Length: 188
Image 1 (cartoon, rainbow, N blue to C red):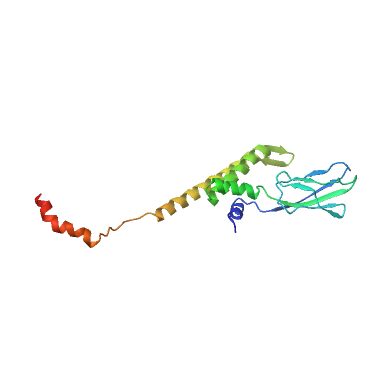
Image 2: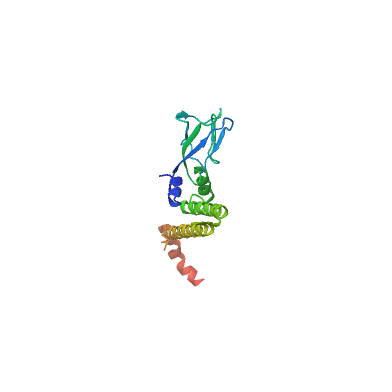
């Protein structure tokens, strides 16, 4: 398991499967997927029942381009996998945190928390309720706990590397002058 996979496991960001369906109008060449970023190589598309290869996929934005455009009334079906953060994002966090997996995971959770707080907000609609700030606070607390665990592990590692005592062994020739001249030194 790579460090990126371990960070992804800690932040609970497994690949998610999704499907987008839209009707072609004969002119639009782009389809914006409802979830992004898209995992590279996972996009499959059909115009009605005919497999179609997208011309371009912008993984970060989830924007799929087809040239030529799907005909008017043609069903465009796209299946894909997505994750909250790209591997490149997680590698950046690992680099910023000196390779510490837990600190990189904490940074990733802080990033997700910020996004959650800005996007979700606190919304109540009929029987549906979202609380982005509460979710963000829970993510930030998890990040704080991960940072504390990483610091505790560093403290233990530092303590394991400490020397309790050091014995100084002198070669026999260094002690000889001491005994030979001890009397002279004492008499002054």
